[in-house]
Length: 393
Image 1: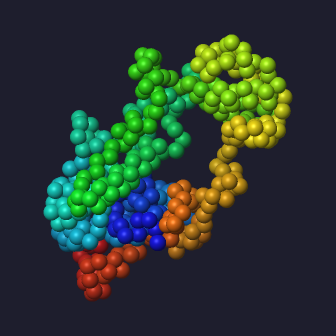
Image 2: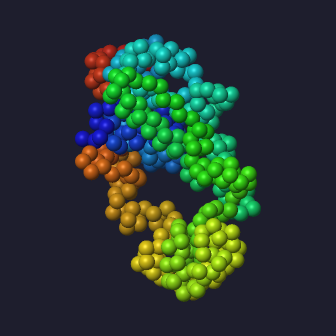
Image 3: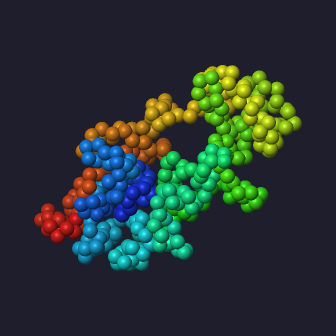
């Protein structure tokens, strides 16, 4: 039994940010009823690559969920959703602000049906502000949120982060917001509205870029793979392959110099991290030359023994085979009814008593409609068939 096994969620989200949030909850045991548009489903079902007609994109984000098709524009569909709201703890949606209100299904309506409902909305720009009605996708939010402006090679063009961090961080913050509201409900007995905006989340993860700007007045720019404040903290070429090295404090700096046979640990230019940062252009060539005297494997062994953080720059094919990744069960096999055996990322949150679990693969569109309508609303097979005929489900 997962930590959230007593929590029931209506998931009206699609594509990435919302489904990522509900996947986190699902992995930890929550029951997720994914509401999808009849005949079409989540937009991401149309994103390749495909295996036996099933989208790898969709399958990677919707495990541990059940699919119920429902036409929310039909009066009967709205009524079904309202009846389901009576029986769940959470509703999550990522429509543009105002969409659910136009359908007559906004938070003000649904909280009257279930005062304990936690209603979470994950949108591009949030429920308020001059941009609230704008549509948004990950790339747009990465651009507007500043992360592209500090990513890339020095003097290069702003670069999108290779994974969809605009969506993913919004999903994580949304899950945190939902869990916080559920925790507070234990005391108050009341639900609340959770408003998460992708742009807000991007600003929140800019980390020290904002503080550096506020303190110095200098606009942060792309500087490649080095850290803006810590030296050495970047990859170096070796006789075989690059190795990423992160000597994050003065103690590690001394250890690094001793191991590499460099007599510069107490050099007045490099003795502290601020000085190393200030004199980076003088220090970098010294380190780069010494790294070229051994292989990446030799440096890795030496640094591991000494406790200096380092590692190879792995491509994805190496990541999925990495012994640490495999040992932590971060690549797992799951059986999909149509696509067959697929390998997907595991669960990064390891709980000792109530561990998460991948219980089932992502659902085929509408696969659980009849079962869920019977289980939650007591509808008969004939009633379900009538709803299908009316294109309500």
